[in-house]
Image (cartoon, rainbow over all chains, first blue to last red; front, side, top):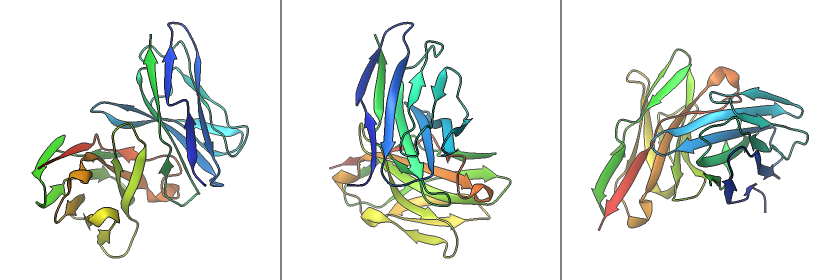
Length: 111
Length: 117
């Protein structure tokens, strides 16, 4: 089946710890995106990548980092610098000029 | 830059009644418009989109939306709702100049549609 997978479904972070959220797509999409969703806030763009080995900051990039070494993969690292990481994280992808499709999300909780 | 306003954070509706979810946007450039639906603890699913052409757009699950350029609106409607339509609905826009959102979508804060039996 073609689609976007995110893992894990739930992730727990301890104080001062970096954690990495996985996003993989087998749709041959060029662009990939990370959004953060908080209750009542809608979705806010963290980072995006239109091509391998290149990525740009979105509206709320502070405390996060990404890499795009392969077309299929766009992992997001939530660093210890992100002081309020508890949220639902959504990955999306699209062909250039096409429509964004979303993965099932990862819920990050702080212990 | 664009912004999207969904005026209603919650809309309660009785089953089989019609519903309209409102979306207004602000942009200095032409935009594409989208409605997504999110069921609890899941990702977003595309309901419909307006790129060009007819201003009345039909989507999945019996939803439709009408683009009104003069009022900068893209309201979502369904003539008769079902319990299964209970979900969060998001309106979003993208800049036509960036290939339809190559730099990401701008979302409203969402409207929670609550269907009452």
